Image 1 (cartoon, rainbow, N blue to C red):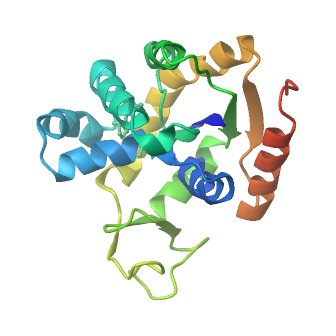
Image 2: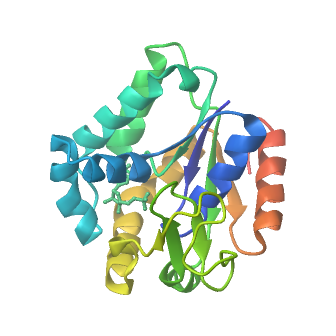
Length: 219
Ligand code: AMP
């Protein structure tokens, strides 16, 4: 199954994608994680991408498209994947359609998590990420067992620079102008399912499973 998770930053895409990865046994491919790895490894692409990421604006399409194309060519992505954070612009959506079409493939379903802005700011300001494995926690809603340490690998938890409140507001603006148009793009192609992204993690997970189970029915 080839899935896309859409939604503003902090909508819970990463958390739900990790759950789906385990349940469906297909990899989560998160453009933000790939970019952060490139920044950490100081690759030329990472050095170029960093200045956009620090400001909360989008990394240029050609860089992100190249990164995703390489990742989709890995053997584990052959049987399906969950794209998290990509595509974020119409140009990226078209590039994705073309790269899949070259292999006679297509996206099966696009799940759009719907969460109000105020809730997002509350969520992101408490978000903590593991430096080592990328697992995510929330200081109030999903705290780790030991303060500051990852439950899974004991790695150090940190707050991403771009999770600071001002940068979050910029990222929400960028979402509205550049990514929101993808909702109509995928709706027009009959692929979009809107998922209420507020409530317990388990409730949201169940809504997603129902949407996936429904297959072709339009929301
Ligand atoms: P994320 O972890 O998905 O919130 O992404 C963090 C940052 O990485 C974003 O604010 C962008 O600067 C950059 N980024 C991630 N995915 C993309 C994408 N598909 N297109 C452009 N920039 C991206």
